[in-house]
Structure formats: structure tokens, C-alpha cells
Amino acid sequence: MRLGFIGAGFISTFHATALTMVRNVEVTAVLRRSRSPQFVEHCSSVGVGTPREYDSIAEVVRNCDVVAIYNPNFSRIETMKEIVAAVEAGATITGVVIEKPLGRTMKEARTLVDLAKRANLKTAYFENQIFMKAIAAQRDQLKPSIDAMGPPSLVRSAEEHGGPHANWFWDPVQLGGGVLMDMGCHSIAVGQHLLTPPGKPLSFLEPVAVSCDTSLLKWGESPWREQLLKERGIDYGKTPAEDFATGIITYRNPETGAIVKSQFTDSWMFEKQGLRLMMDGMGPGYAFEVNTLRSPTEIFIGDAAAESLADAELALEKSTATRGLLPVQANEADLYGYVDENRDMVERFSRGEDAMLNWEYGLEITRLLMAAYYSGEQGKVIDLTDPQIDEVLENYVPAIQKGEGNSVLKRGAKK
Image 1 (cartoon, rainbow, N blue to C red):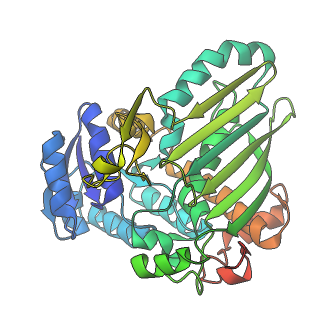
Image 2: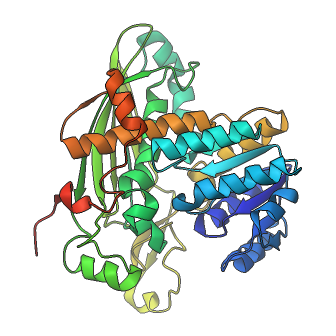
């Protein structure tokens, strides 16, 4: 399978690394951008192909079998329109991949679904945490207990780090919000997955209610606000986004009527080693826990040696420390699920099928995200069984996404 990339930044490089562990795929094309030469060099060095740089999306489409959309959130619609135009002009591709989130609003997400259907393309929505081997292993191990005692009734999922890599991630208009848009989609999706009984489809549980709190606890205060303005050119005094979000989604099991709950917590204010994914859950008589900062390998860097360390992320993605006792994850692309989501896409697209997570699934995650933002704005639980709420969410744009975060965000103590 020949894979073409729209995007050549951090996430594209991460996926290219993951592809070293996936058979029958080669990166053959990438849209020319400022970082595409480095991306080509990386692909070649890790042995997943030497992609050619092309000046237009249409050229990328004509020189691959599957297109992966890894560019910023605000450019997804126009990118997909150009892909569809190339297909309608005669290019033949099997499918299209998109990195989470599918869209910044329901309208954007639905537009993308409709465009893929118009071009008769198979789709893959990349939500890596569902594919984490630790998640799959605990579900396999607990299946006999779940079969005997019943499915989990409460799961908690958290993703936290010190802040994004790229400037546009900090802009609530371009990103579509703050940490809830960036990482809440992960936590919401994996929480729903962990609650779903083994053997049931991802759409099995019925979401009935969402509550959420969105707050600005760190990056709107001194000296962090000034640092953000200096380093990223983003003024959280004027157009802030949430750096902390937490909430609960309530689901109903349609077969038993049982109510189960998923709690999500996401932040850009994590002050420990780097990126931490943490999930746990409880059912009748059993429990599980996943924590990616637990590693069989640790290193120690003293003050004298720390001065020579050039790359703070050598040990762990988004590492905030260059000295002291640090955990090392030897294969982060596999740990976080990137390998297995790519493997699933290649195998299913090769059989002429959608990926396990298709764009309709991504649309539903967008709906839950919008419900969470709406709950934060309204300061109340959102009833997803109310047909009027569906009408509201279809056309809803969060105030934070409109650059009006000052009117809705809970703030940290002024300094």
C-alpha cells in the first residue's frame, strides 16, 4: 500500500515511526511544506520509504493508494475538498485517514463524512489510545470476569502533559478550543471503549448525559501567560483556551438498562516527567489500571551531565525535565497504540473495508465533545436524550473556539 501524507510535522513523523512495525505499506508522497524535507529524511532513515515531495494535494493523491490527513484542524475541510476533486478528476485511491479530532464542530465533522461518501472512499479515524496493547491486554485478561460478573460500571481516563508542540495548537480558533479539543477526544473515546462489553460494537452503549468543567488554571496567569505570548505569539489574556477539563459521560446499556459512567480529565499543566496516559476502571469484583509513566527502564541525569543534553524529549514525549530520575519508554509509537491503528487501517483497507474506527465513529466523538463544551458553557448537565439538544449541537460553535473564552472559562487565582 502506497501512503501519501498531507502534513509533515510531529504527528506525521510519529506515524512514520509506527509504520516501521507495519507490513505491506510504504510512504511514497508528501505535500511540500517547510518541514517536509526533514520528514522525507526521517522516512528514509527508518526504512518506510523515501517519499517524493509534491506541490499540490492533487499530485499527492495521484501518487498513492491511501491519503493520510495529518495537517492542522483548521485546514481539514479544504484539504478533503481537494482530495475529492482529485478523485473526481480521475485519481484512484482506496481510502483516507484522518488524525483526531474529525472536526472542530459537528458541522465540520459531518461535512468531512459527506465528502468521503461522495468520493466513495473508505475511512479511518485515528484514535490511537483504543489500540494501546495495554488496553487490549487487560480486556482479554478480564473477559472471563466480565462474562461472569458483568461489564465495568466506572472507568476513568486522563491524558496530561505540559502543553502542545506547535503554535497553532495554542490558538483556540485554529485548534477549535483548548485541551478538551486536543486531548479530550482521546479520553472520551477510550472511556467509552473500556465501558463497552467485549464483543459488542463501539456504538453499543447509549450516551444519555454529559457534564463538564472547562478551566484556565495555569496558562492565563503570570508568568506563564507572558511566556506563552513570547514563545508562541498567543495572548491568553485576550483569547484564552482551557488548559484543564474534566467531566463525566453517563451511558445506558440498552440490553440491561444499567447506567455506567466514564470520567475524563485532560490538562496542559502537568508538571511531572512528560506525557502521562492513565486509565482505570472497576466492575463487580475486578479492576484494572494503566499508567504510561511506569516503565521497566529508568535513567538518571545529574546536574553536571544535564548541561550537555540537547533534546529534552529523548526519554519521553513532551518531557519537561532534562535531569533527575526519568522514565524511558523504548517504543512510544507502539505503547500509545499508533502501530496497531496503522496496522488495522492497512489490513482493512486492503480488504476493501473501513477501518475499525471510521469517520462516522469520529462524528459521534465530535458530538460528545460538543456536548462537553456546551455543558461547560451552560454550567449544567446536558441531557443527550432530548431531541432539542441534538438540534443545538448540530450548529453549535463553542465560545472558546470563537475567541470568547474570557466569557465562559473558570480562572485560576490572579497573580
